[in-house]
Length: 352
Ligand SMILES: *[C@@H]1O[C@H](CO)[C@@H](O)[C@H](O)[C@H]1NC(C)=O
Ligand SMILES: *[C@@H]1O[C@H](CO)[C@@H](O)[C@H](O)[C@H]1NC(C)=O
Ligand SMILES: *[C@@H]1O[C@H](CO)[C@@H](O)[C@H](O)[C@H]1NC(C)=O
Ligand SMILES: *[C@@H]1O[C@H](CO)[C@@H](O)[C@H](O)[C@H]1NC(C)=O
Ligand SMILES: *[C@@H]1O[C@H](CO)[C@@H](O)[C@H](O)[C@H]1NC(C)=O
Image (cartoon, rainbow, N blue to C red; front, side, top):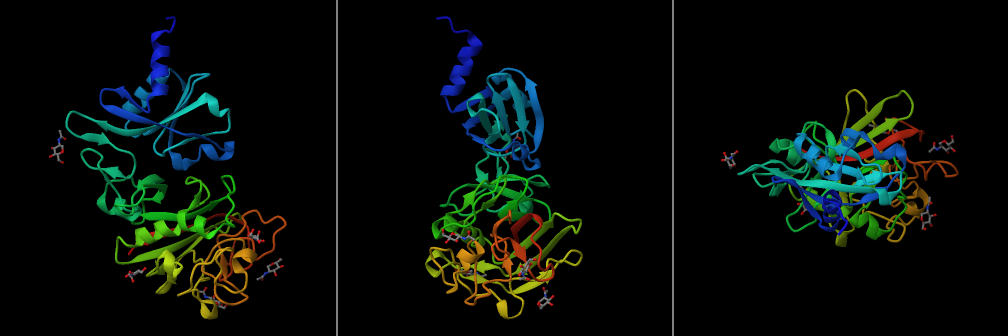
């Protein structure tokens, strides 16, 4: 036959999707995706160990033995094994064909499971949190920011996204960051409805998913977090009573009131004065209710008003402003004024 046992094991591992590292732990083979080197090892993954040299089977055993390991990437050319705390897929700036990615399904003893993917819980990892606040309130997640799985509605999809499980649990529904590859935010109604982007970097979770999350609790607040390039520090604010209607009603937005952050206030660019977006339908360039080509001019979907001003905020605009107009570049006019030098921008949902 000429095939050694370890090689045979590796062949088998490559063939079958689910592998058993030892009797009591299971992994599923996931994808390796291309990503630039400045993004692939972001803190949000929780890198535990990088590039130890071992076999594939030992790499999976390492992961099973280390309490908080839930994913590993293996390089089948130089036998490098890297362990991570969370997430579905692996990213590399090297040759994709060299890398394999596995993520944990469960680690169980004779009776119950002792380790589940982040967001899953229960004796057999059979339950999943509805949103990030749900995880914090139930006490089934670590007290930090990380990638997690959620399922907003029982008949809807399982989503992977960024959760900050501190502060009562924040569900990151939109994330922009200069730490990762840019994603085009000037997209269609369909894209804004179902979501797009890379969940560890720049993404929009999708209005359909936001709508599902909002069904699970009587009241949510919408948070805005703006992080500057300059030493100004982060700025934030909250909108109480945030709600959206369904697709047929163009995802109309409802906001009750703005509540500034006492220390680092972002200012109110959504409901301040005559440019209040409360009650407005969502618009994209291919389904525009603004009557002023606002999605095209601002370069992204939003709840634009029916006025040439469009909006006092543009969080879905172009991140790298080179060659773009001010209105097409991400900005937040009130309080912070006419600046575009942000490092990160995100929108967060928090149960009230
Ligand atoms: C398994 O889970 C059940 C139900 O939560 C619990 O009653 C039982 O003590 C657990 N068994 C072990 C060995 O942890
Ligand atoms: C949010 O909007 C939906 C309509 O899409 C509505 O059914 C629901 O009652 C609203 N929630 C609140 C708290 O107003
Ligand atoms: C509302 O707008 C006014 C006028 O532009 C501005 O002076 C004020 O700071 C804004 N308020 C908030 C909370 O952003
Ligand atoms: C956004 O895309 C639309 C449709 O392709 C285009 O007309 C518009 O100029 C784009 N806006 C920006 C700011 O790039
Ligand atoms: C912001 O600043 C740019 C250049 O500094 C200017 O062209 C633009 O008109 C300003 N926009 C607003 C809304 O103040």
